[in-house]
Image 1 (cartoon, rainbow, N blue to C red):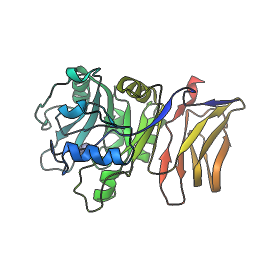
Image 2: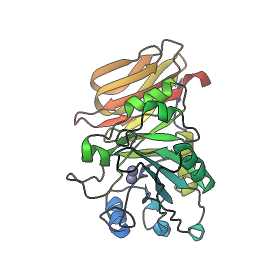
Image 3: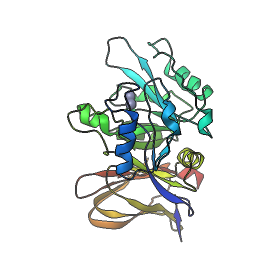
Length: 303
Ligand SMILES: [Zn+2]
Ligand SMILES: [Zn+2]
């Protein structure tokens, strides 16, 4: 019998949890941003303007808006920074209020910012584009009370080829952190290459509402992708990791401390026998266009 890492019941919802509008440094109005994602059949979207929660979250015409923001710590003239995305747990549009504190100028630690965001009502917290931000592995490892890092930020990939963070993610996982990986657009609209629709998440949610989506994100019931679809993945009773996908040319099982395995070919179903003793396993899938998908890890100490 196969044990899926996704819940049996529920629906798949496509979303981008990180985008900007003219409320901060995005080029597009909230109306235009929303229109574009709706045309691409996204189920949910978040405006994560810098240090400002957008009050347009009440718009819900064919696309569900998640109330959110991106908080920043700036380090003077240096390129180093910390950006953290937070999703709010607001149950009805009437709960929304604008919150616009000033950007913090390196007077607050990363951990203090995370703790403050939780106090402000953020129930899902993600470290944005850690490679682009010049965050060191040890800095990330020292932080607590966040749910995810962005394993792929399409906007940063368009800006300076700094969208990927697989190494940092595995560093955290190897050290026992239970952190999920998210792909997103971080759409601003002013990169040379259009930074829409390059990275998104597929959430297995029990219902199409904000609370269910956020609960599914907190539980890690999603995968991230820039193209390939993951239909199912998990571990069977014999201890084999398995995955079923849209057509891929490469499937990589990543484990620690023993090594995983790479497969190549015309792949839609792939199985890898675990060796025993792994602390986690996760999978990356690459399709024939070179696009990638990332599962969340399964933590094997739990089994
Ligand atoms: Zn950012
Ligand atoms: Zn951003």
